[in-house]
Length: 631
Image 1 (spheres, one colour):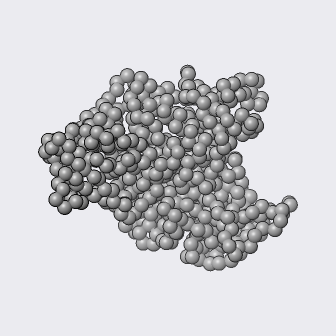
Image 2 (cartoon, rainbow, N blue to C red):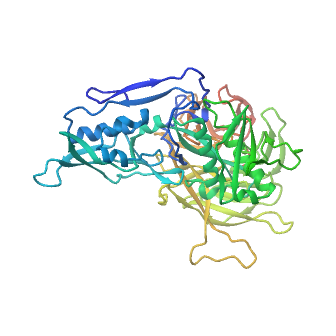
Image 3 (tube, rainbow, N blue to C red):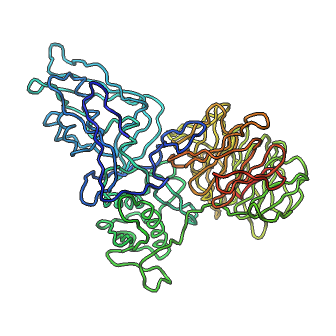
């Protein structure tokens, strides 16, 4: 919702509602930061992904949806320079009526020169920006004035071709100076920011919605969702065109270095995306004409997942036709049918129903679902506190007294270098990520011939904040997403927060050992954090687990004596759309989740419990500890 008028304000609030067709709002695109239930901690507004830059007109094909708009009042006669700047800031936050009211605060020449864009803005914290006092730069000349606007920035949206890349900012934004002149006895702005908009967090929420672009992981096996922002008032045609252009351009942001696009450089969108009967037809030209069938299948997969999940206020897109220079392309084995209903690539949801745990004798057990039969795989011995199994069910990692052991699931475990290990997680390439007192580390997998996997390392992982600065707080837990690109981490000491990041890489730095000729170049491992994070509050978080492609379940710190309420369990959306409380039980100390499968928990007294649907009751399913789904 928009900000309500306050006494003396110079705008009125209007709520527009188109009644021809009301949309259904999927959870993934709800307004950022909205909590759907009581949760522990505070969800920050996510600032990840690009913002599509689209014309904002409400035509016949506009998204038919309710949306709040701030409809500002024109400048009042005799307004001071400070009044004029404040009125302009309120007016420029909305694109209602072509921003004519905002232009009323400008001189005629400034209005012609002012070209605001959705993709250039500063989003301020709280109720900022702050408007300073008027100054007169020339002594004795009271017909020219300046007013400086400043404040603490939450996000900077910077222009980059057809989209903008938000970046987190915890400091003061560069001050913006407005120059004003007296015209006909009234103050008007003669020099506003040429394209930049200055927004409060509330105005940002009112103006933008979230969608997902889908890119490829580095191995081209999976699709990875990348949340983006689109203007609330954009038309359906501009929305679809903007999404396709960003798939082509592969926008910057925290996921950029961990993903790739199948669209060859030099690909162009020819004309508008056309939708007919639930089928989107996309006509591409340029470099894509020289691409083979495999690349075009990957392009079609990106298009289908991105466009089919974009519907709001228009018919749902269920299939895609890819045209190349106006000619429909048919995939191999499609019998000349160009309509594609299911992509060759998918977004991995999780490892399935089989989970692993340790019994009271130190044996490694596996079980398919809560009602499945427990199977003893091998004896590990006593004293192990946590386990991790690779997504392909081939390799095992186990912790005992802070020491890490790894090896084949049914083979010999080898003690790894270092000590003080706390958590570990396998990625989709059988590389192990772990936390230690010295930070995040990676053990790189190497397979030679028919030999089982051996792990090199551990290598120190560089963790960067969204602004490129190194993360200085300790990382106490890590879990890699099923796609092998995104990670969820717990950051901080006593005050912990949940954060998300992307596994990326950088070329070897000066002084590093380069690979031998004929071997692939290995880059130093790194993780780039998303600006989205969730505060753990006073209790903090103790562990976490991925639940499908777009959600993470966290476990809060233990609450105390038996019989009291258990530690908080919360499901968080990676894109920041929502956080939802899950019923808890006393004594829970570890959790394991997988999409479409039971939530499994281990208790302090050595019992296993399961919750079938995140919202129901818990029941005991036997004895054991450290349950873990693969990953």
